[in-house]
Amino acid sequence: MLNFEEELKKFQPSLEVEDIEDAVHQEDLTDMTDILLEVMEKTK
Image (cartoon, rainbow, N blue to C red):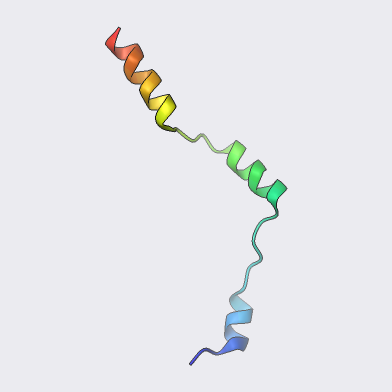
């Protein structure tokens, strides 16, 4: 059975939308487009 008092102690609120946007923009994320562009450059 869950101990709600213990679970509440562990609770951390989620980031607000603006904070998430900032966190994502600060990361250097490689997506499929970046990978395809790199492969195309290497094949030239």
